[in-house]
Image (cartoon, rainbow, N blue to C red; front, side):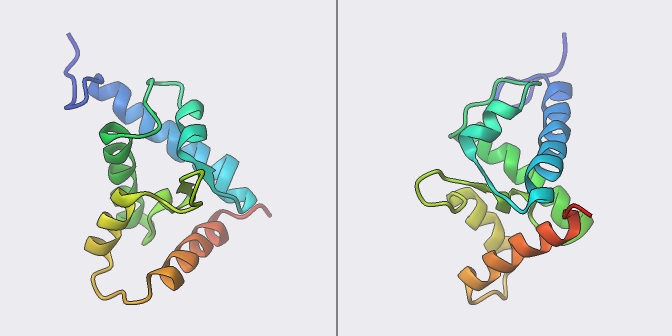
Length: 124
């Protein structure tokens, strides 16, 4: 039987879903200079059935953000936003405060974080 993570997903499926989500965010969102709602991202992920809101999605995006931060110096999940506020949720900001300890102007930082991502992946 496959090992499962804290949220009950097989670990291999969880990792595959993160790769699927990252690819989707790069190819279908970042390249076009867009963002995406939590709900639409949840629908786009086919490998696992993950709810748009809650601890599973929060941890899923946290893990992806740490990975892209380590590799590229930005949090790819900056592109995943609430439909109501058009900004990321609390989990995103908690991680941002850990990774960017010296930051003072969060609105300015968030705008530039998205800009960095769009610039890296923009369509040529």
